Image (cartoon, rainbow, N blue to C red; front, side, top):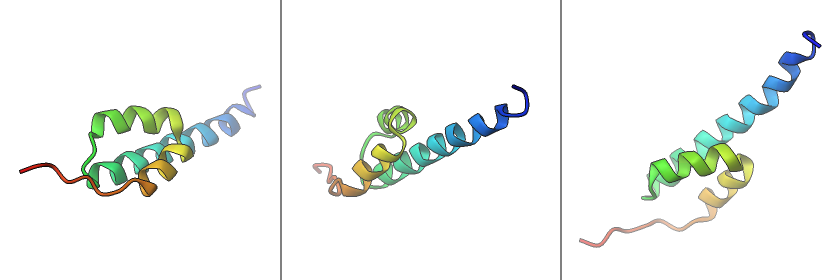
Amino acid sequence: MADTLPLTYWPMFLHCLIGLVAAQVAQRKGYDLSVWMLWGMVGGTVALVDAVRRPQRFLGQ
């Protein structure tokens, strides 16, 4: 059991890392970072695809 434990951590780590990248992409496009941090941690790769496909958000001035 102890020998296989690191094997379970790598996919979880990569999932969260991809989610953080998704949050960063969405934040640069003008979306709320805190919402995207949560969505990124839950969604992982799906959140990254969603963030990349979303249009740039322009805030009204």
